Image (cartoon, rainbow, N blue to C red; front, side, top):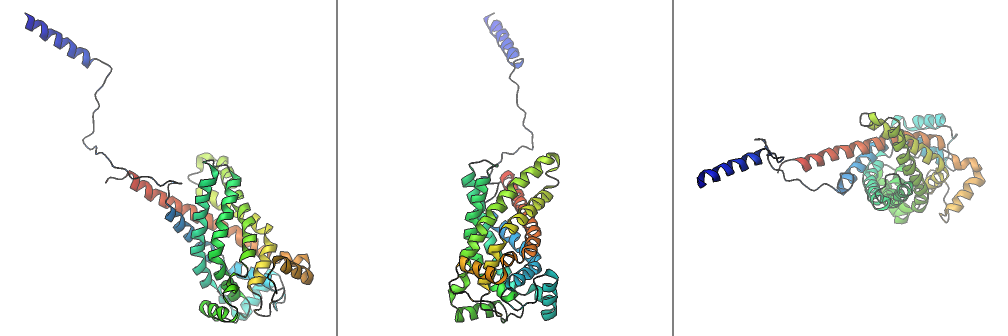
Length: 338
C-alpha cells in the first residue's frame, strides 16, 4: 500500500512539473557554439584600416583633380613668374601651348608618392584624436576641429617635401626633368631645408583649413542624414560627397591667401620667381601686397575652390566607402565560426 501511495505521489509531482511555467529549450540540430573575435575599438575598424582607407582616398582625390591643381599653382606663382594673365582660360592655353595636355599632369608622380602616406597619417591621426577628444559624443565640433589640426600637423610633415617637388614640376617651362632630377638638384643646390621651406606656412594654412573643413563636414553630414533618415543607408555616398564638397569649398576660400604664400615659397628662384630672404609669412604677404595689391593674395581662389569642392567630395566618399568595406570584413570575422 505504501509503495502504491509513493508511486501516486511521484506521478502527481511529475505532472505538476510538466505543467509549470518553466519550458524546455529545444536546440536546433544545426546549432553550433561560436567563438567570436574581439571587435575593433573605434568605428569597427583597426588603426591600420584607417591608414589604408585614408591612403586610398588621398590618392584617388589628388590624381582625379591634378589638372586643376596645376592651373591653380601656375596662377598663384605668376606674380613673379613670367605668365601673361591670371585668368583660368589663359592659364590653360599657356600650359597647352607650351607642353600640350601632358603639361596638366606634370608632377603627378610626386603627388602619387606623397599623397598616399600623407593621407594615411592624416585620417588615422584624425580618427584617433576624434575618439580621444569627443568623449563618445558625435556632435562635438570642437573635438572634430582640434582633431583635424593634429592630423594636418602630422600629415604635412610627410607631404611637404613632395608637394614642393610637385609644384616646381608644375611650373610653366619647369627646368626639372622629373621627380628624381628635381630632388637631386634641390639637395645639391639648396640643401635639405628647401624641402621644408614652406612647412610652417603649410601648417599655418592647413590648421584653420582642416579645422573648418572637418567641423563643416561632420555638421553637414549629420544635417543631411536628419533630412531623410529612412534613406541614409541607400544614399550614404551622396551624403558624404555633398558634405565633403561643402566643407572643401568653404575651407578653401578662407585660406587662399596663405596658399598663395605657400606656393611662392615653394617655387622661389625657379622660372624667374622671386626669392625671399627670410621665408617669413609676414614678409611674403607684404611683398605680394606691394607688387599686386591685396587682389594678389586671392590669386587662384576660383580654381582652388574648384579643386577642393570635388576633391573633398571624392576623398570623403572614397574614405567612407573603404571604411564600410573594412567594417563588413571585420563583422564577418567577428560573427564567423572558428
